[in-house]
Length: 337
Ligand code: P6P
Image (cartoon, rainbow, N blue to C red; front, side, top):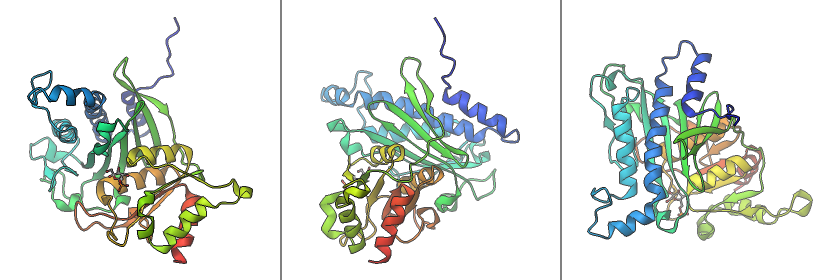
């Protein structure tokens, strides 16, 4: 039986990357492996979410006799536990927590990095078995190593990210992350419990046939967005004909598909919610970083998402992300709005 030696695990990949950076401490690689561990644990619970709901009805305890927790609270706890017990993260901020959490133990305060995440985005889709995801961004702290992190370590522009990624819990479970060196995708092989490199050096096609938006808000969008959507719907046959509208309602699933196939994802502001719905720090910035490294673009409709200087942990922003040529076309419509 021939052994498949081409499969590279996340551990092997991150260690391999270290060889190219002999001066690297390995702290970032370790942090990424920690995230991979938390994601594996979350994946187990996500995959039996329906079952847990059934079992949870028996007096709200699960088969392990633990109190049944909402999955996003469980996911949040997993990330905090793994990152706090690791030695590569000085603190975290999460969609699930009002404020950031500083890790004050002696090991953690000497870490270089902070991590921001949405532990389980789209969790409202769990009970209908639609793909959901985890989104994360990693920054180098701006306060001195050896001190307890402060809010300014978290309020950095997305361009300062040293890594960003997501896990999509779908027909298969994938971990995709970007550093400035590129974007790589790993598929979880449940038979060995390892993330295996399945999508090396992911690039976002400069054009695609998909546009993703919640059409239910169409009449609340600004004119330029409406005009762009109508252009997508009426593209002439000579240019390939109308684009396809694909919208899962789970950003990780939608952006992951568009990253691989090419396309544009839009969550614009509306007349009732000009700032839109998506959070800048731990939803938009990670995807803006990933797609930009892969050759795509991301804006709030006016400036690059990665250039926005955050004012608060949970601020929202309009979000447009995807294939570069499609983003250029959108921006032309927005300029002429
Ligand atoms: P709407 C999920 O709740 C989420 O935050 C994103 O994952 C998704 O793209 C968006 O909201 C869907 O929002 O308003 O279109 O249902």
